[in-house]
Image (cartoon, rainbow, N blue to C red):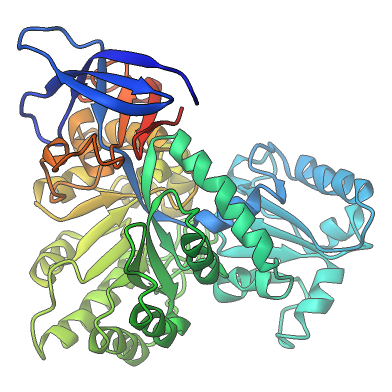
Length: 491
């Protein structure tokens, strides 16, 4: 952008409630060139906060999804299969066809596809239909034949869960160039939503793509990169080589999975699901989880642990307590990702261990309403105990929000936190915004940083109304009007 313009009477709002700094922001050739403080008593026309931090996302996965068939808006299984067939007919090659983002809880049929149904619509090429959560995939016969070369014991139905579902990209890998191109594109989408920092959670192929983008000077977001559990030594090698010494790309740590998802019915609970006689899947034996945690602690690598159900969270806490018996764990060394059903005693134990909670309020907006996926899967009593944001906030826990890319949308997340279906668990707009901007314990004095606007590092999300003052019914209409990032007017 090459315009010259001035944004007048902008209130630079901090994470806390102190009086904002009111100023005019003048741009030359699209870059911030002057910040003029205004006298007290002026009325703001625009409001600005720091950028959002999506603390749990698979950004590369989202970027590659844009190159696949997005089934997220389909309202029936038949519509999804028809979309796959139409794309297959339009292609000139016989490569794999990916259908991603589908959610059977929104389909008229209310169930996932089966292999024979995919074969009926597309038989001549491999087809992978992977659920929005990534924890479940269904293959057609052609894809099943390829998958058996790696997993001979795969079930004839072509149904893959957890690690196998997430490893499918290794059977049909994208090129390094495709991954870098996908990241280049999707980071601009994140910026357009006011997201300036992300925690990338161990997506397949992400490590080298991010390192390449950072080395080329093309990484625009601040990225905390978490590597998968199989890459502990690789994380140490990259750290020792200085790959995380720059301003943009930082080593987040190691990502572990202890259970699956509610949608795939693989999240591990202490009681069975309401709609089947199963209680989910623990992905580690106790000793194996302890050894993974100990290996990360020995190498000074933080860990982000996926634990949705109360059985998974309980297992994790037990192994952390074993580890802490040998010496206190650093506060924030472990973040629990999702933690959708923490019991009160688990919260107390987590507090003693210095655990940070990383939760996804967009899940509440999408699946947590009366009659929704959570209510059908878990039943009324447990459904009401999911995602206790107010209890986490009031307990004083370190607490951040992410999206897991389902979808990447801070406004939807704010809506889920402010309009939680259980009134007692709602956050105020100001509290929800604080968590999404980096959490209650994030550094303050953002605008007071030395030469914030002169250095070219200036960044802010701009709104037409004070986002901290919107009513509990208004967060879905939060009027983000632009983004200032690295001194440039972006949107």
